Image (tube, rainbow, N blue to C red; front, side, top):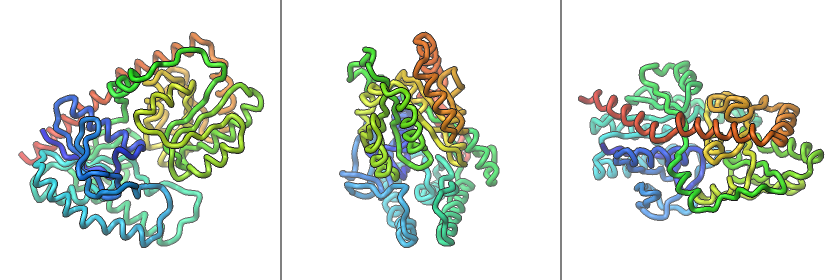
Length: 403
């Protein structure tokens, strides 16, 4: 079975979305599916076709920098971006005719979904649409103008249009599925395929490096991921500043890039023992994890973080690290407090400080038990190979619609 994945965002750009797409493609290949990716014109691509981790990526634009970010854009820029769906669709049509896929699997946003729906009907191909979040509904501190609200509603209606006309819809978790159902998407259409960990990929990467098992003289807290406001990294830094005044023999390392990058870098510069280390490449991730003892994911509570399951907790578990996260819905779907990680009340600095102290002085035996449970949880319940089988069943079901 050949599956054409239509991606808005992909490698080499690093984000939760591109990593999930990478793991979907790699795991599907591992179970025998012929999975090929075609990427949006906003995505970095140096060649018309590239092979990454054994997967073909067909580019619809050659560019050395991406135009996908959370940074605010003018209304005119947003309109132009939407209109670029027309030349993208023409290129996609040629690719579909050449590749002759059995399934079209479009990944959010609607930019990928709309042409998939059109060509699915035209060529009688099943269409699966994968929703990562209803990102356009998230609240921001910035006051929204009439044009902002108009554009967000337009995007939301386009997302609903695609979901209602797809043969199947994939949601990341039960919270997101419930939200989709509340917006009028039928229960029978929505399938939950949770975030997982590519344990094969992690094992391959870890084998390239010598694991540092020696006890460090200084305990290292850390964050590895995208730097956006809802991740709460500034909140973590301020809490760490207070905590380190009491316990100076600790440090905080922050890896990542994003809309908050400049602000976080400036904040880190002015606080002792806080190190902003910027963006890292996928093959550098094991070294980053190896340099950290306790991984943090201090997400702030809002509609988005309650409905989106992050990859960070699962990656921390797979790398054998202790994990501390806020009790937002997306994280609570993965972490049971003191079982496979630790939770604090989102946005509550005192609760975070108390938990930092507990975990800093955790008994060695308890630490080993929590890590062991976390690794078992990842291997048994959050494997991408198991997810690949779920996708295969979903594709087979969608094919039945077309006989």
